[in-house]
Image (tube, rainbow, N blue to C red; front, side, top):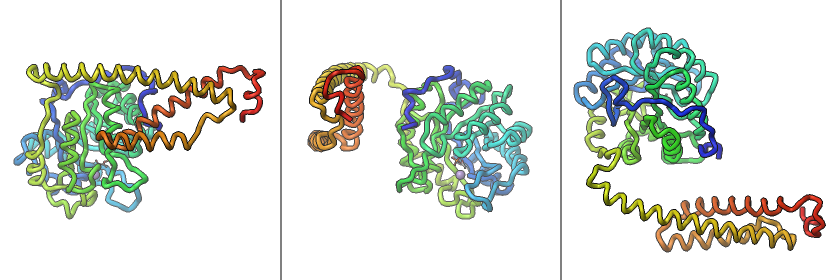
Length: 385
Ligand code: PEP
Ligand code: MN
């Protein structure tokens, strides 16, 4: 899968700052709310006032000024005129303002209007030309920038966009997980596929990562569950689409919630400490020691299994038997998933684990065959296909 980060050589270690060091009075969890699109001065200010008055934890007001539409003809945002509405939001409510930029002209207009933060949308992140053009326009500014994941599950494009901005000198940089478009039916508008943001975080541990449950859920019903999952996974904030009258919204009407609903949703969330406190640490150390021991045993068993796989490879070579034996593999998979089921292991996990082992085993057996020189007199070498 192209999304795996393990093989990505990183250009430079990122030098990005934690929210607390952005010199904007922010901390975790960073809460961002506001409508999908800026539609009118009344809608923008009405929503912002309700957020500022009722939900003091929200520090940033989002609104799309220029909207990327999948097909032409939809509402494309109010454009430059909306920048003045965001300025009023900041002046009246003290909320920081944020909008999406997709081309250098957006960057220039947003900077000129004093917008506090920018985000790069899921349709722009996967285009290196667009991201580079934005990065060039941002050179020398260090305005905070949030990079949404690309619509397709490809972590390297996400990493590439983040690196381009970091190379342009942006240190107040964060990533936004908004889910991935997926060809199979899923209960989400954009499937969360949590393993991708988790890998991003493993690659750039200091990079701030927030979640946009609105675009994942596509509906208010699952917002709270996704937001809680993000906090449980140590995400450092949330961006939630909030509109004073969602039913009449010009874009993403199905997923926006009223400020009062957001307030209740946030009250119901449980915040987790990013790291265990000193009291909890002792018990955690013991459990981690146990995990380390088990990991060591698993590694030793894997090495033994691979040694045997190589011996099987030699046997197959000597007897001119094909390396891949689908029935045998099918038998192993069935046996292991049944066994796993009896001891409480998820069948999907068992399959993924066994598939990784099988792939490596095939690779090792193939390597055994490749060690035998082409000119071998071994009759098996002459006849195998
Ligand atoms: C948005 O935030 O309104 C938006 C267009 O998001 P995305 O780029 O994640 O689709
Ligand atoms: Mn939206």
